[in-house]
Image 1 (cartoon, rainbow, N blue to C red):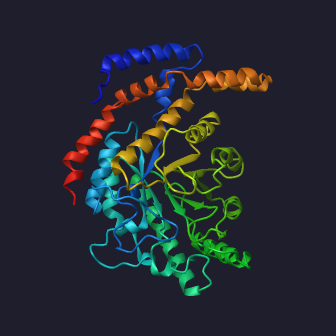
Image 2: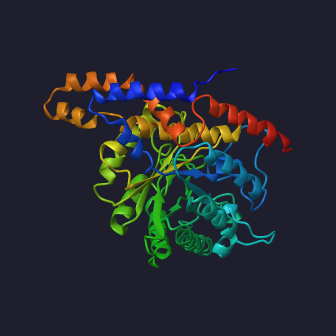
Image 3: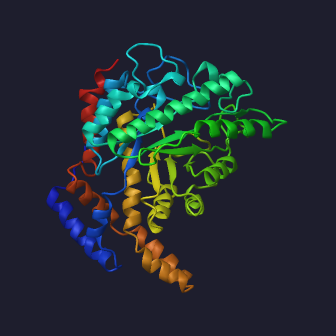
Length: 424
């Protein structure tokens, strides 16, 4: 169907690109070294449409998947196999992001507030074997005690305490994961709480949420093992008029309580980009978490592509040397296409965006900007867009022993034929 360049062609293209970038003062060999640092946290829920292993309950809390493409992972073994395939086709070392609904309880019913590290021991052993980091999320949706649309901000004290206990249990699980892998686990809190129509009392639910979070975070955990993050949202399905955990709420909470603020690319107005929020936020908090997705008209969690928005996110991180302070996680799910393809398209797009940002002659662009030469700045920004970043990316993949270009699609087709097609 397609032909791919051989290794010699990739090497020649890289040498030519190296010369071109050197004219702009960019050392591509150093860029290749820097590319080993960023770790992308790949989200497990793309592989099974956010089903998890807990029950067969329908998704709620504003979460929805569309499509019924064959080959969905039906259990933990299949999900881990699919993830191994994905990691084998990505350059660099990365992490896995888990939700609590992916606990393995041996067939026993374990309530979410009773989950413990032992229910994730298979995931921990698997991640250690592959040298992966682990991140974690409490699951505050698709549960009878979330049916009202309220969890940590619920007016029902019993419901509220249940979710407080779940969030505390999640932190303990995250701590254990961090200790086991030797890499801090980012444990994120996102809740769907809100009203479909206009509320009268916007304050009381936020008071309850603040007090619940204070209880959740009361016990200090070594940040070498666990990092706490809180995630905001503008609106959701069923919470179109009011979301308790707004951007202003969580921004304030994160700053006051020294927590990571999670910025989700789909959780703001369609005309907003989280790229513009990164530098402002990092003036007041030490680190942030990103959930990189692609909203189309709403928070639809489409597969990430190499869009202007994605490039802007990567540029903001790289230009300001924020690589060590920004935890990049992915958050999308598409059941209408091959799920392993979705993972690889999205993760490789994120890595390509970082590659392109690292190839930018940032120092020279800042010089032009500081001198007030805005025409020169715009000219150079446009020129950079047509530079041979793809040749550097292909060479990076080659050096890491993963497929380059269209060869990756061939691997996806082969895996689908040999593995996914056998799943009913």
